[in-house]
Image 1 (cartoon, rainbow, N blue to C red):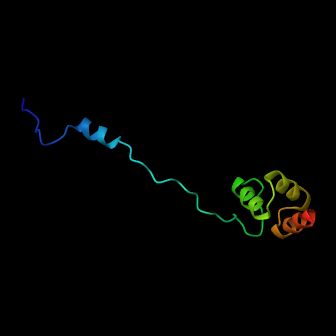
Image 2 (cartoon, helix red, strand yellow):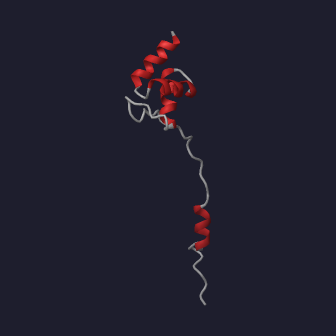
Amino acid sequence: MSHPDPARPHEHEEVEKSKVRTAHAEHVEPEKGPHDPKEINPKMSSDIHYWAKEFGVTGDQLHEAIRVHGTHVEKVRAALNHHKS
């Protein structure tokens, strides 16, 4: 039986090296727009988050406005602006 080449790492050493973790850059979500700029999808958390922030209301307030006025962005915007006044 021949002796392995000392210049060549063993297979298990290569696997171990591949498991070494390096520091990742901080994950920052890009500002995403709504799924549809004219309709709010109340089942999409990203839409609720986006439109609640856009209108300056909580998710619950937005859900209530959608329940009463529907999902059309301009109707919800008008209802929430009227409610703030």
